[in-house]
Image (spheres, rainbow, N blue to C red):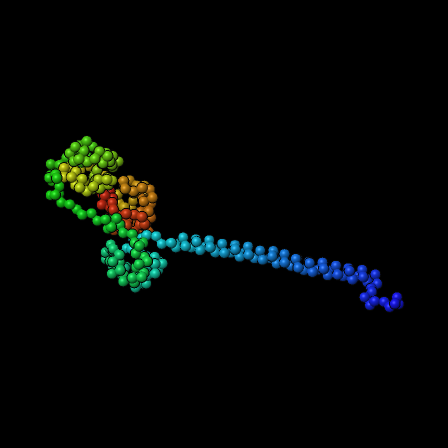
Length: 290
């Protein structure tokens, strides 16, 4: 029996070689399993990071564009071609608006805008909340007759001078609250004297009824002589001499006049963004056109 050898019997040298081969295969399998995975994970992470960066960049760009094209409140009387395009108005609708405005007519309500331009109801519903009409259009003030006042209307000669009346006299004669009377005197001092009864409109808190009561008994008699400024030729410094203009307003007016080669009507200043025509009657006291 000893002469019969098992076919599984392997020489020691072969056993060592087979063991080494098995170890190499095992190591290779482990390396193949882990190494490519780590490479792929690293590559995938890099791709995801670059992709996220691109997305963030696109988001920022979209936010910038949204901000730059954000519509703000505007006066529909001054819609330009580009403005009309961004609002979605057709060329025909803009032509109807320009034809109406060419005759120096003004649109003072949403219904007038629709009637004149004939824009669709769907477009009007989107843009009409952005319409910004002057305060005097939104809140018209009804004038009252002097005949309904408590105080009778006097002639010019019978009235006292508004430029010398005191705060105490206004409180006692008219019944004006003390702080309102002080505002009148302070504003008169800032103007170096009233040049028109219209300037009482500047007093905050002085209601129309009280103003009419004052003007029933007082008027501007000893007004300061002023040299009215030619708005079409005035410098920024000269425009700042008008009590109602600060530096920025004067600069905007100067730029607007240069761009339009002058103006023929003070109401054209209403085309300047942020300029209110509410005080145009008082502003006109200090300006001429030619």
